[in-house]
Length: 352
Image (cartoon, rainbow, N blue to C red; front, side):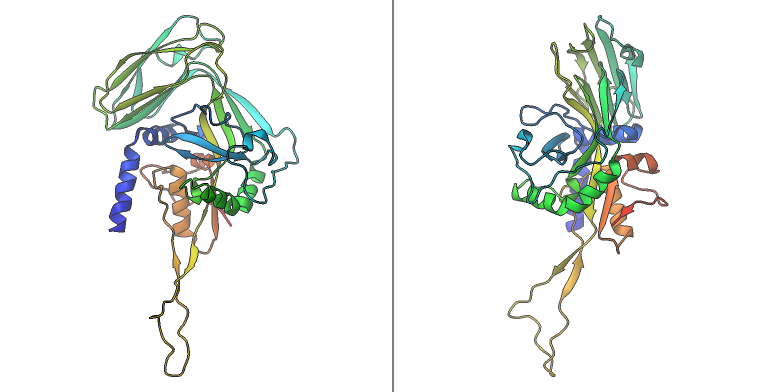
């Protein structure tokens, strides 16, 4: 009965538009990392930065604290920091590598640009005239990110130190999340090592789509990428969902499109089974029976088809002697067969 329930949860999760968007772009563009359906930090969070520790729910990153900042930093006022918190201090002061993602349309397999095309946005600076672009999907599931302005990439060069840091502190971070009643599992916690931020965007998810699913957009970027105006020309709702970023002038570069980071999972827990008053009695010689202790795998209650969750489950099933597994979004580039919940064999991962 439990297995049937878990399968139902997984099936429902895979049907949501934000999971479809993430899954489809991860398969077609694994180098970008985790695609966020809701890139806008809103009023509750600062823009995503390297060193942020948080979790992703319904396609949005929720920041808890930043591992690189001191405990009394003003950005820590909302949640505070874990007990015995200490910031990560790196030996390299300028450890952030920067890059640029130029305007373009990034599509999953089966999604085509029917008008406009990628050359509509593949110019810098953008043209002052408005551009029209239409997307259609020939598969059951698909996704597209339409980027009319540049996105800035940030990645730490000290990735190994970040990996060591999360394994050392994950227990206190997880306890911190439990005290706040966030309802997440240990493997949901992300230590951000890289991200892409931009000023505006348009996200499209096709799920359970029909053969004629199509979305058309018109976007105007009148100056050098600080002003964006969106307009939806037509939208057939059969299995298609659209979300677009801010419209207006002098937009800040605070919209996070992709996140890359570490996640950790403990592979097993030892749970003693408590004895009650009616428990086993001493034998005829007065000897107590062996303590009843069993190894119980702890299933995640937030199951989805996140490829990194699939990878962590794969490691857990094949490394019973290890206490902890560590994975990173970059691992998706080095793994063959991350599709439909399967992971190919023959690749070494990080074990602790």
